[in-house]
Length: 250
Image 1 (cartoon, rainbow, N blue to C red):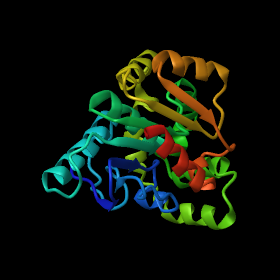
Image 2 (cartoon, rainbow, N blue to C red; image 1 turned 30 degrees about the vertical axis):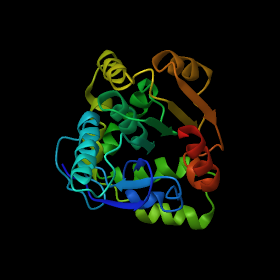
Image 3 (cartoon, rainbow, N blue to C red; image 1 turned 90 degrees about the horizontal axis):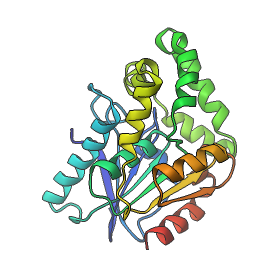
């Protein structure tokens, strides 16, 4: 699928991937165009991109790759290996991109990859997710994670959010339907990033020492940093985020 997108800036290629229920506008405060040709996309089922099954993570990563390939073929962007930056769900897609396709570097913003804990939480809420209370669940989930954003920025992000029940259920199908063993195998496949691809994790909501150790085993080249206690560290301090990404990729 060719995704809805915009292209700005000049220099090496970098792609920005948003979180679940949001779209590419979520990155508006983050200006990386001083150092990169920046492609922002709306992932499948989000923003102006088509809502079409399947919504599994490898498919979402393949959509990004197909979109970049078409843009390069049409000389809209340089035919570079991209830096792939993702927030929340986009962090998993960015990680999968690094495992499945050539990447210059991967940056994962506040998306834990050890999904067993998230699976337990999602399964407990399955009734709400599949029923009429779906909007209340999504609203409550993000309200718990938005600490650190000022009122104006929180209102901006909330205004972008457009929860689609079928899309969320499609993306969370492994959490709802897979066994813990199947989920662990999926995660293992999605984290097979080549050792020469730098991998930066910027965590807002600290997942704990056990997770940090697990992540280092899964992706040994990981650089793991804990910033502000929020799900949106890149939006709480966009200038710091831009400086860190530029330094990491340099």
